[in-house]
Image 1 (tube, rainbow, N blue to C red):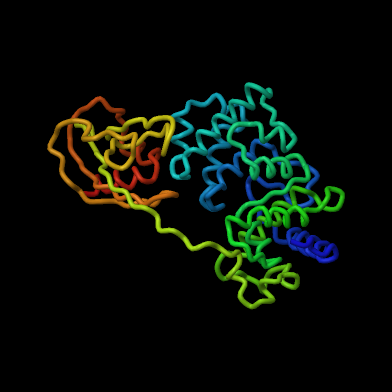
Image 2: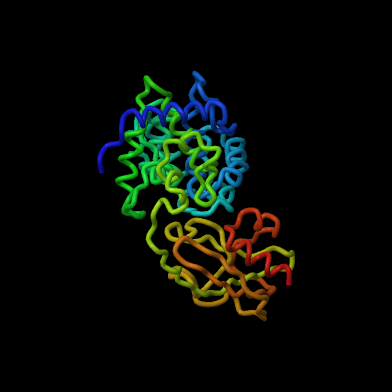
Length: 347
């Protein structure tokens, strides 16, 4: 890969930053473009963890709830696991919630509640990968860092018509993002990173990109081709495997629902859930208690690596379970279990 032309890179940087100065989104974790102040690293880190695999509209109320309940990293570090996992319910990818607690506790315990201010220092914290460490370093501390998420990969692939398909193209796309990232004396590093991510999420969309509104349209090779949607190139998707199982919804005389705490490691680890069987190696092999169970239908849920169909069984009775009011259970259960509970109670 030959290095991009320096004049073209300079033109792209200037055009993007001029666009961001006018069109930056007002988000609860973001400072306005050109602000002399920096966003609290706790808020940057929390927002970035939430936004992994989650859209801004979906993550925003969770961010606001978390920062109201736990306004500083020390408060989050002191929180009970179940409280945090319950507050996370609905955001998905629950390993992020476990990593969130581990990181908060490491910052509180090992760093006096102060986040490290370098990319390397941030990478040493539990659960912080290359992307999150770079994002916090540049947005919260003004460090030059190469921040590459899926949106940035798409922008790079289209600007320079990278023919290598994902995921093999990632080193090449990162190198292009590095070449394009300005020095701090030229543009604010945090503004640059957020401008590039905003462009990818709002304008350079996966389908139907808004090329007519793009500040980089004149410098985009994919737009010049007439078919920008074909980038980034991707390998053909492999169909997801399908699993089946049973969810057991036991309701007691008071109308409460019986739950279990899932093992700390593994899928939905550490979360409260319904007793289930047949779909996960860590699950039981039968109902939690002998009773007159009846089949109330099925629910389907798509995980990252497989699709799941659960047959929902309901009964009334008592067992050695964790009992919760239905409203509380619906608020705290992961989505797949909430679907099963709603299905059982609708019968």
